Picture: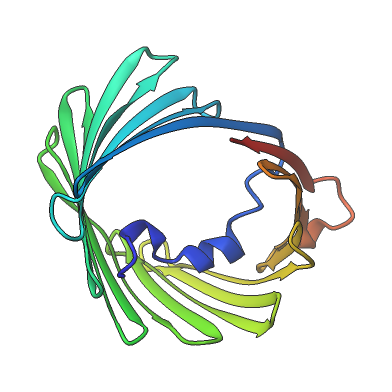
Length: 258
């Protein structure tokens, strides 16, 4: 089956982004959820509740499948505990072996924001297209276009964001548990480029090490699964040009998931 739009570039994010979001802080994430499902004939109904302390939101979803082959309808909403506001959401998704189409409508202050995405796959090639329409501003925003190629031991990903930000990466599987990656970004608006090299090594099923270096900084991260649903993350960032100074950052994160 074709992947969804949100799965595009997953391996790139896993190598270059995940594990470094605790830098400069002590962070505890707690996510709890309950799920209830009913299946009648060929139509399935599933309800999910999720509470996340990262943004003090309570999310509920109702998934309806089986109406048409490959079609999934999701309705729900998010309750903001701080602002005491509710944001309804409706998503329609159609998927087959070669195409995935997604229409996601979010209601903010009863003014819809419509996200539309399309993804197509063929012989290892994956192409994506994403646009957003804001009804309150009546503006159609070009979001993202990308093309990737996946082989047995490497993944090449190219993306254009907001018409002006170009990025490309290659991830290679060197040995069974070691991945190496190279990422290059360039923006003609500010005439600035970015180059990073990253590595990910999994020692066993519970311990993983990550490292990333760019032109001025060295990132180090380790993730340990203490038990099922309990993950500990340690991360640090070292300023290469000011190595003897105290401008380095460290962080620790604990994630609890039901």
